[in-house]
Length: 307
Image (tube, rainbow, N blue to C red; front, side, top):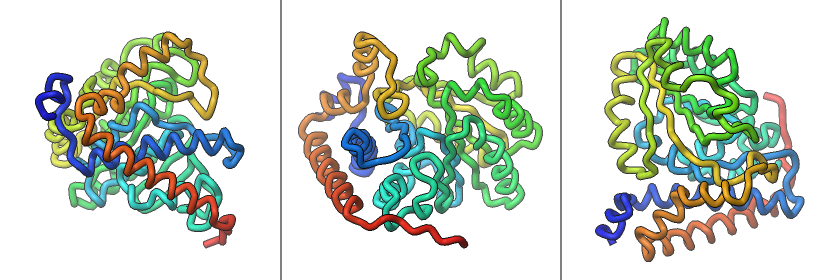
């Protein structure tokens, strides 16, 4: 099985990594199903196809690091706090046990060392402020902020990068470049490149095209450690693919474009590389999420109380 995986350019996953990847995949798929059944209100933005990014990064983060996420943030949360998936689902469904009393919903979650927002570019200035605080604390912690390629059209991003470089803050900026900002291809909305924009502020930059979790982790371990040691920010751009719609059903891509995206899906590639082990873990996580949905759906509505 290891040789088969190697032939496909993939290394064997640790059990925890595989379980985390599949938890996120089936959690996100379940959300789309709940919406189609009319059991969820509002909106949601799944990270289908991009799950490997936070899973690869998670062991490089410490418990005292802060994560700043965006509108497509369920995977970022579950990679760090997978044992609290029921709380996240309850938050999205507005049920008892919700992480934020049911008032944050899918996009606005603040829990432990995690914060997400649906406002484009909002989190990066906050992440810089937190990174400055962490640097002054002197314990080597960092702030990790996730952005999409579309967010690089926001002025707040450049103001934040300017301060991060000037103040030498331990900030890890993770760019999930899936090539499309809602319905606009990136090349139609971004002049230049993310690498060039990082260089303009003198910020180190890395580009990651692999979906191999172990290879990504190995490649980024040194640069992330340098962020802690030097206090210098780092921009890491992941060339990734969004398998699902922008939100719960608004996908303007053609059938041919969607087929091309699916060819890059880590799920299919790992399933083909390690069929037996993958299938067993996949079924286990599928049952786990189904049970989670049933249990949380049966809870009474959440009641928010003012602090």
